[in-house]
Image (cartoon, rainbow, N blue to C red; front, side):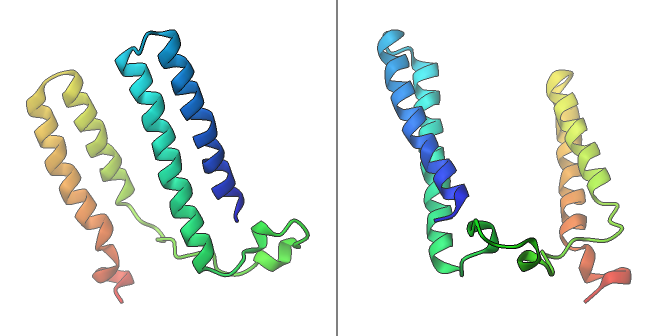
Length: 132
């Protein structure tokens, strides 16, 4: 069992009892009690996913306390080189949040910008210099 699984499952044993204590102490105040129970449920869902994933894959060097740093050497994944798409994606998120604070019609403009930026970010390796 990986350390991440233990970390999230320990959240279940923290948030459910704290939610119960908070509920009893606050005479079952709806928002806080529900939030604590939902946080415990979310920790259980993430812990369950990590546990199922850890069962399907081989043990990682991170899970072995006696492992050397060199055992984790090699490719860690694919990262997009020289990508400009996170910048318009962040700008569109700013416009969306700005629209929520100022005027709702600005939010729709930000949502349109976000859709275009997200499509461009997702498909940037299908055209241009880095096309497969």
